[in-house]
Image (cartoon, rainbow, N blue to C red):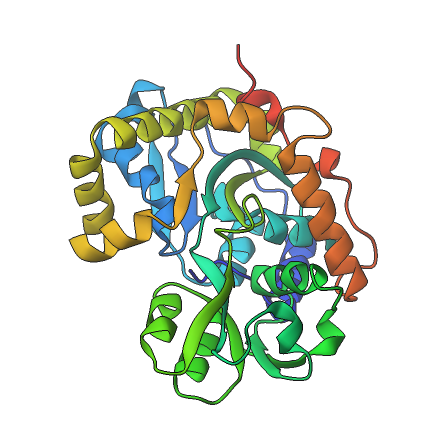
Length: 325
């Protein structure tokens, strides 16, 4: 799940946005170019493409796997991409640093796919005080850690942070190099298999905290609203298909994301997909879950000094494409 972003990659993305030229926009007949990392939550994109749901909605979609979010954002700024899949808190961070984006649809809500692993003697978040915790700074993982610590009236300054990407953090924990780590699957499972580790907390207990979404360039949304609507409608059909035809849906996801059937089966339990109805609720109104999540993320990144000012969620959340018509 390499969609999380460090402060370094955010700075690169900001510079890329500042340097982007005003090239001509693609015609409606051109494919919508969408980048995503290898994460189970993005699997329905391939269902929509293979089953013809995008085509039925009047759009062609070109899906690109780009593991580095900084590369995706740079390509988006240069107009080599039209949309990117990432986490809501990451989009808040990008916009706060100058990115001109519109988040138009939620994709999935992490439901146990992200979490904190720790030594068994650390039984609660309060026990993390003074211990080493591997976590990627300026990322959704750090956002998760801060929310978990806050439940026991602790802050990031109460733990000894070791800056590591989530996969590296998980590996560091299972080899005994840190006391705890913020990571995702398969490292959560691997930590439980050790004789010294357990999952201290996960997004299963924090619904709505780490939500993946799709953001388009604002200019693309303005120039091609019908194409954006077609994309959103096609994706909604894919979620319906996944629920109605799970076996075929799993095969499509596994083949396109290079995952074994066993891995797909296990990973699907870690996410809750957002379909048409769920998105209407997620984006519905100024006090919607999407607005609250973006506001909380903005405050967090401002508090830790990555943002000088948190962006107004209204400036980059566009509910018009998921509002019932």
